[in-house]
Length: 95
Image (tube, rainbow, N blue to C red; front, side):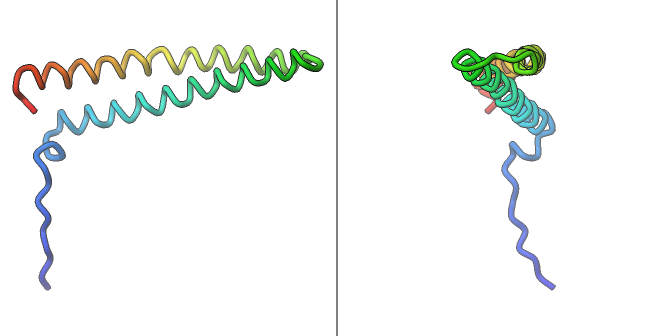
């Protein structure tokens, strides 16, 4: 039985780069969720503003804004940290 072994790039074998890629994916997911919750809150607000803004709609808006902020703030910081680490590696010739 012969298998063709495909050589992996150096990046995928380096545990630091693997962890950085995982953190980047986590930051992207956090940003999508956070901004999605903000968009949901804005949409519900404008629908309620143009019609009848109920207490339930107000509660949903508040929850979306609070949870979106809790998710989005660390995701933004994590995204900047990953970018800074990659930039530092490039400047020091470690790419």
